[in-house]
Length: 83
Image (cartoon, rainbow, N blue to C red):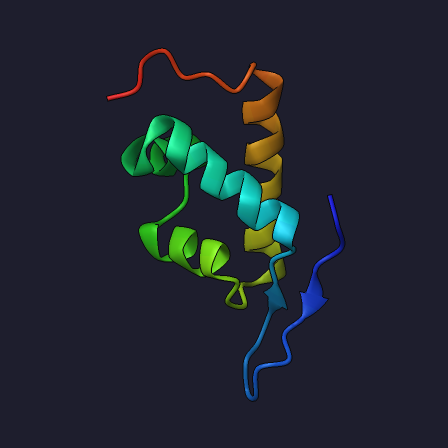
């Protein structure tokens, strides 16, 4: 996955999520739905919106999202228990 970059938005703190993370998160939501993705990744709806929208997030948040996405990909990417 690509390196995150410090946000260029004035007064914004954090890093801007790379495109590959944004796309992977969007694909996960498309595949299993928003609620299931939030539960699977253990993130808030605001975090989901910020990452997919390319807004700055804290580096620790981005690390958590990346780790959860990689774990999901390692499980085969399918969620047979989706609601």
